[in-house]
Amino acid sequence: MSFVAALALADTLEHYVPKELIRLKWPNDVLLDGKKTSGILLESGQTHHQKWMVIGIGVNLTHHPEGTEFPATHMMEHISAKALQGPEPIMTGPDAVLAILANRFDHWNHILGTAGFEPIGEAWTARAYNVPGPVTVRLPKESFSGEAIGLDANGALRVKLSNGTIRDVHAGDVFFGS
Image (cartoon, rainbow, N blue to C red; front, side, top):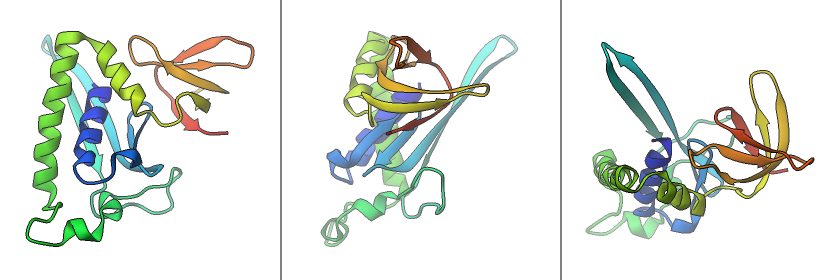
């Protein structure tokens, strides 16, 4: 579902900023011009035999934090002044952004439900940040580096190590680039 949310958010941002600025960083960040503009968190569980999932999406629309480990930005920083002026400005507030996001989430969630993860993985990979490319993975008890080569059938990041071994990363902190 984090891939569905990321694709929906990327589609949403395309309404406001040039498409070529938008990239998806595994597993749950959306970047604008190489800087983090959004994060996605998922929580799931079961209560009284009822499964549940909560998806949280934070988007920097007009401001962003300074001094973060990964450089940050906000959407308004990438919208042209011309697009913000005139009788129909492109950005009218968070409610409009949310409406587009909800629509695009429904679209990608429908694809997941009817066609499975494969088209989601393909669409995500087409927008991926630095995949393929060098990556360092930090796990609770180890760190390793290699080349991110793509996603497996369930969305794990496939990392090829220098000895040729391929490791599938299901969770962890990843840092792309050399």
